[in-house]
Image (tube, rainbow, N blue to C red):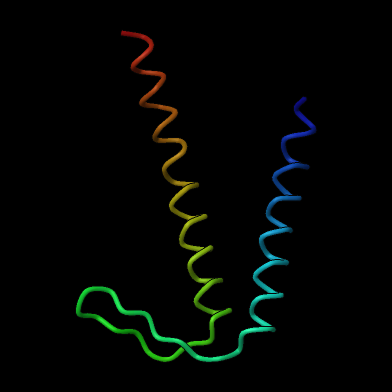
Length: 77
């Protein structure tokens, strides 16, 4: 069971990276993102998508250990 988890993680990550590459090649038109009153510069869709995935992976890798610690301390009480 310990060997399946890293293999499955690598397969999912490879699939996400492949999807980003395919979308980036097919959609080279520049877009800008509006968030409230802020607007970004014109960037290709693939760059925006890759940046979004990277930020999501970083936040998830930070939050999962915190959630695990909170759930462990909640069970001990």
